[in-house]
Structure formats: structure tokens, C-alpha cells
Length: 429
Image (cartoon, rainbow, N blue to C red; front, top):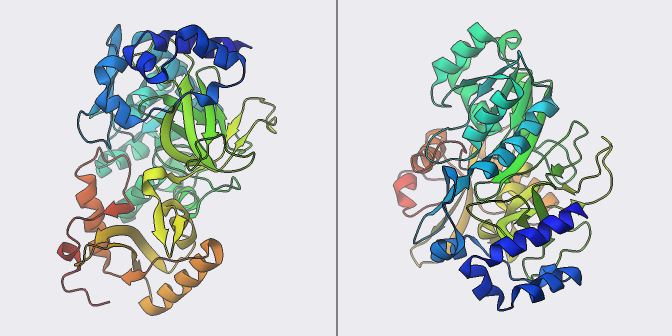
């Protein structure tokens, strides 16, 4: 009942912004009546492109204390003011993840997320850590020696970061990677999908857990426009949705209608907290989640739970006519220890036809690794993209070039290349 009243309050507040009144083409009492009749899902979904094109009619500065940016649009950048009370709600949601891990007064936290470039989660983790009393050591993921020094001299029990970045840190430090007793024991995995549709750790997340020696890891899901949407509990049964802050639907991307129970769909979110710089009503995140479950969790909570994020609408790939998401490909390939690293690339060939290839570097015979990977992909996904063996330095250069255009929080593994020959000249396989 409380969620229902908050939903109507958000709709009423959103209606005061010119865009919604124009887009809905109904007066406010009629829109609220649709909610009463259980027809909320008939309101149109709005997207990032709508934010970009209608910023002045959707967003208000108000009592803002921060600005966050969301990339991925042409035209006006999507930079959103965060209101004072809105920030506190976001901080409270992030604090739940740290508390679930056991962090509290007297604890020490290694913070590996960016606090710069209008990235939202880094500052929220910093504020949340101070709220619950755990002391943060804020380190850029590129400052390897500083990270090692923090672990060697301060021994933080907790760490927040992207597991792919954590693996890269361990690899780059090599013999200088601190011994197990000086590393954190508990990890808050962020800015990535770290478990699969069956709630098991992905191979990449499992590798990070093993390499760092974590006793417990929890994953969190959110986005810049909405803050934290949900997080795992220690029972590892999906993301517990912060249902006091957001209302979540899963929508079939093809029909626009609610996904069938247990089926995947696009995550569509409505904000339930006010005031806000951007009041999201049926905001399509572009993320595809595996499922949405309203059954009670083994931990005792009764909040709805969201399955892992298996891909993005704009990252759908067609391989032999079948839709495949990059993360599903990596979840299969990462099981193979003979593949040292890999990146999925999309480019246009000399005839301007779109091509998708998995570039990989193997520790042994490339032909054998490619054959094994192809067979495994076909067994799990029924299709496999073409595989190309390349030197490890090419894969690293592809990632570094893409990271140069980002805040470095996520290591790119799916890359759209403008000039593929820049990387492949001289490569024969």
C-alpha cells in the first residue's frame, strides 16, 4: 500500500514537468485512474534519448548538491542534478550493501571506484561508508602502488570495485600483490554483473574471489539516472530491490508488455522518492535482467528480487540469425583456463557489412583453444561468433583505447571498432 501511494505521488509530481503531460496525452486524474485500474504499464516508457532531447522539460535543478552524468547519447549529454534529499536516499541504499557485508564503525574500506567525472557510485560509496562509520581509503584503480601500500600498511577488511579491475590490479602488481593476510576479506562488486541467471558467480567474478581470497562477495545493481536499484544478500538469491526507493518492472523488449513470470526482460524503473532533479516514471534502463521474483527470500526478506543483468538492448548481437548478449558469451569463454584474455569486437568490413568476432589470446595452441571455445559456445548458446587469435598486447590496446574515453571504472570487453585494420595489420590468424 505504501509503494502504491508513493507511485501515485511520483506520477503527480512528474506531471508538473511539461514533458510528461505532453507525452502521456491525458490529464492527471485520468493517469491516476489508470494506476487504480492496474494499467500503469500502459503509460509509455521513456529513455535516455528522451532525456537528452527534452532536458529542460524533464529536469529541474532545485535544491541540488551534486550532478551525475550518463553516457551513451548523441546530442545534449545527460547530466542530472541530484537534490539534497534525493542524495540521502541514494546513500541509504548503498549503505545497505556495506552493512550486509558486515562493515561498520572501526572497519576499513578500500574504495576503488572513481570519485571523478560525474560518476555516481564512487561518491555514494564514500558518503555511505561515512554514514555507517567505516573508514574509506579512496584509491584510483590506476595507482597500483598506492593500492598495495594501503593493503600492506592499513589492512582494510572491505573493498568496493569492479572484479575485472581487481583482477587487472592483481595481475599488474604481480609479485608486489600483498599476501593474503593483508588483503580485504569482503568485497562489494560494483559496475558489473557478477552472477548468472542461476545465482552462481560468473567465471570472472569467481576468479576475482579466488585471486584476492575473499570470504564473501556481494553484487549491487544501479545506474546514474536512478541510483542503487538493488543488491544481493548473503543468501545470494538475486538483487533485493530497494522497493522503498524504486518500483521495478520487467518488460518484453519486442512487445512492450510485461515479461512472463520467470522470463527475461528490460528493467523499467519508476522513482518513488521525492524531490528529485529527474523524476523517472517508467524509465527504460536498456538493461536486460534474467527474471523478477516476488517470492520470499531464504534470508527472510519479502522485497521483490531481480535476476542478474544478462545484457543490454543496445548490445544485442546477431550471430547466425540468433540474438546473443556479449556477457553470455564471456560467461562461457571465461570458463576456459587456456584462454588468457578475450574481447568481443564489432566492425564493418570493406563492403560495409557488420562483423562480430571474439578476439582471444591463449596460453597454448590457439587452434585447440578456438575449437574448444566454439564447441562450448555452441553447447550453451547454440551459436558461436567467429574466433580470431591475436597477441595479448592487441587485446590490451583495444581495452586501453576504449578506457581512455571513460572513467576507468569498467574494463571494456565489447568494443565497436571504427578502424579494425589499426589493430589487425600484421596479424595472420
